[in-house]
Image (cartoon, rainbow, N blue to C red):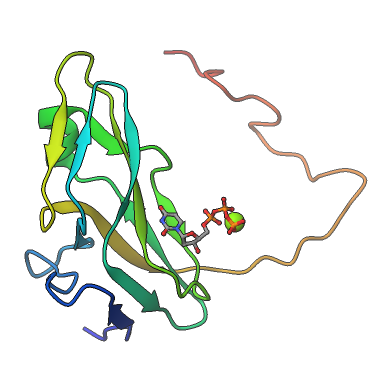
Length: 146
Ligand SMILES: O=c1ccn([C@H]2C[C@H](O)[C@@H](COP(=O)(O)OP(=O)(O)OP(=O)(O)O)O2)c(=O)[nH]1
Ligand SMILES: [Mg+2]
């Protein structure tokens, strides 16, 4: 399988490189660079200690980890976060604790989210007076029922 080359700058040399847990995984785990404690309903922007350079025509998407979501109600406010090919800053994770009762504690070095690298198209936007017809038309937002 051919692999896309992504350059990584470790801003925090003590943290591991982002890494795939298994062959075939789509998401590479990102590590928290700081301890975080989130009260119920609280959110925080968590640094990951890495910056990347993607080739043109690619983007990386910061996805939640299903284990944190299922066990603790912890997810990302902006899931999935978009990392643009031209972004050279630190990748950060917008963590939120949706649990009604339990605080959530994350330690520096814990896996906090996962990064999915994907090819993306750039669109050329053409303004028109009227769009071509379609079967769905303007129906949405539950139009097909529950
Ligand atoms: O979960 C995320 C989402 C974004 N970013 C970084 C990479 C991305 O390239 C940049 C801008 O993200 P976005 O375009 O989603 O945010 P914005 O609010 O539109 O900011 P800007 O005006 O800088 O584009 O922030 C992250 O580190 N983590
Ligand atoms: Mg933007």
